[in-house]
Amino acid sequence: MTDQYFKELLHSRALKATSHRLNLLTNIDAYKSAMPYSAIQKAMKSMDRVTLYRTLESLKEKGIIHKAFQENNESYYAICGKKCDVHHHAHDHVHFKCVKCEAVTCEIPTQQIEILIPNMDIKKVTVYVEGVCNLCN
Image (cartoon, rainbow, N blue to C red; front, side):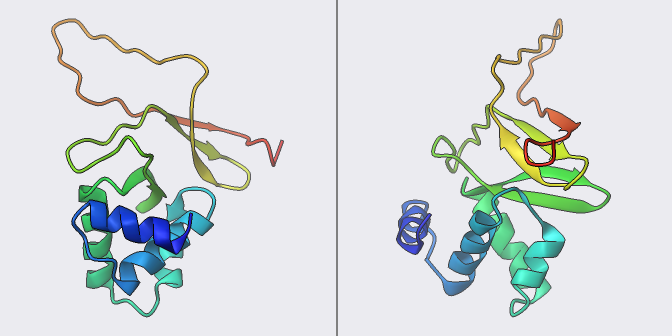
């Protein structure tokens, strides 16, 4: 994705296209899988922790990024798809973590996953799958 794409996306969500936001989005996009927070911190070393946290939170709230996975106090972030917006995150995918290279990716299942629990109104289902990715297999 280009800088121009991110600028337009930020403006469409009523956010200014600051250099911090653009740099963060470019880094997450270039990572090619969900980016761990520790890697984000290294890539954004010029940004203090509070500013980084606030930037991540504002991008999550506006439906631009999502927390794809969390394990051992490490959060992984990924760029949202076009269906996400300020009011709703639409993630019709599973999060897959490779046990060899540890990459976390968003994968579209070949079959829809439907979970029904009697007398319960389910609002969100998160599916996490571990295995060996195509590159490591």
